[in-house]
Amino acid sequence: QAQANVRKLSRYIHPDGVKSCQLVMGFTELAEGNVWNTMPPHTHPRRSEIYLYFDIKDENIVVHLMGDPRSTRSVIMRNQQAIASPAWSIHSAAGTSNYSFVWAMGGENQAFDDMDGVPMSEIL
Image 1 (cartoon, helix red, strand yellow):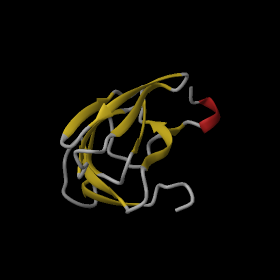
Image 2 (cartoon, one colour):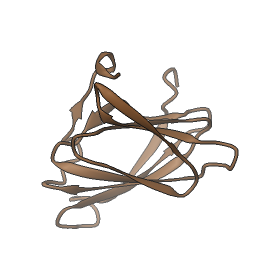
Image 3 (spheres, one colour):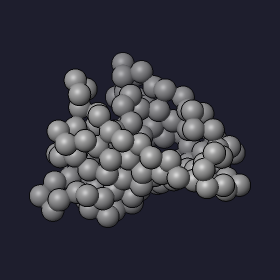
């Protein structure tokens, strides 16, 4: 709770669940009072990832961070909007309230922990 990123992550398509040759998919729900997801940010150099944000009330937004860690960009996301994150891009987001999102990854493998973390000190 101290870092405002308490969330429930559910995996559905993965090697030990519903099988697929390249796809991994699940969803994440942020607990009430929590606004950050995927913190600290990371990349998946061998996979691309897609997000579909939902449970965002009309008066709220989610700021999706992406791009090279030394030159990030932000994209304002609203309810039921999707965004793709290429393999070289970090991904993280913060909302004005809690929210949920479906995530799906495809690429060279299905290893959930195959990611390269990016220290907060390197994010610009």
